[in-house]
Image (cartoon, rainbow, N blue to C red; front, side, top):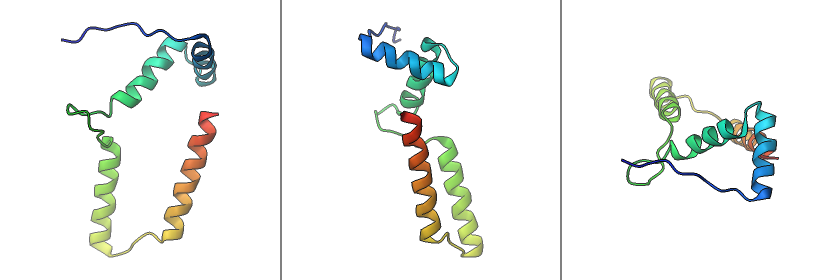
Length: 94
């Protein structure tokens, strides 16, 4: 069984971690663990990224709705949503 280990951060990394944690309202250790879980939690046994269950569920629901109705989302709407989500995620990184 794998054992835990410590991670050393340089001064700049520690400063950025602390700032990000404070912005999220968490202590740096909790924030770091939460962030790591968000990344490593999506890696399968073979090291291949797996899609989060919520994405798979949403895809299945959308496909079932399409098969039932034949109605699709206009490309403009899908691209607008994509760009809005991308802009939001980039803003969160700043």
